[in-house]
Length: 138
Length: 138
DNA sequence: TATTGACTTGGATTGAGTCCATCGTAGGAT
DNA sequence: ATCCTACGATGGACTCAATCCAAGTCAATA
Image (cartoon, rainbow over all chains, first blue to last red; front, side, top):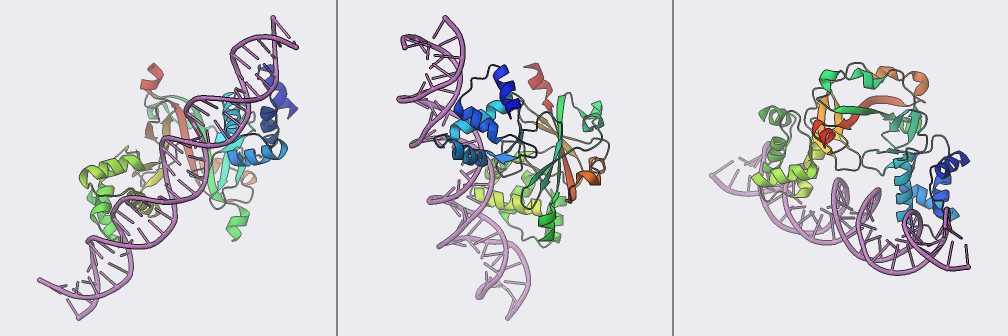
């Protein structure tokens, strides 16, 4: 966590109580909170924090490349602080739970130039879908 | 197009003017309309059609496996009738344009059991992102 | 410690999509 | 050809996520 705060400060990020709390809430491995969950946890530590600030801060963290936005189809976006370890996501179709996974292979290399239609392709996003153990059982 | 209408009728789909129009609007290759665009085009042919009906019909077509829902991050979902030819998508980060692409390789095979965490993985979705020729120029 | 421009606030607003009570009608039955 | 009725359509209200904005606050530098 201070890792993150350290880096942000180094980049000239103006430090405020609100930003600190949001950054702290997002710390850890396999963290995939929605903006509302971030707001709830931040509010627990700093009751006056507003929804707009949470969205602003999340947006900045994404722009800085410190956090990845994970859109999970219909539901609210989730925010993944694990941005420095390249990975993909495994999403449960039942409950929306997310796991980070690291597949082998390089999907970018699998797209031949003839299939790029003149696009400048810069990233690939792979989402595996299925049922988590709990939902498969039910 | 009668292919689709034929199949639907064969499955006991109750045919109505509204459903016919929605199915017709969705016909073609490289068609990726939002629900609102479908509504607009359907309205041109059948002015009284309602938004709810468009959503209902799209939902049914998706459930029947005739149309694929493409979530493009923040923007409205798009509906892709090209469901019988397996493919992935290339999305322009600038304007949201979508192309169907057919990469080589099998991403499902790239996820080892040790990275599945007990999930029953049933599908993979690969989204390539980049700039289309027009947006790259601007 | 004074200053100031960046940050925060919260309430209004937008946009996508869903819900629901009611009305209409496709298609089988007669 | 007509009748019936269960399934489909309607549209307006509603939800939920996210954004906007004008006014107030404050972190960082001098």
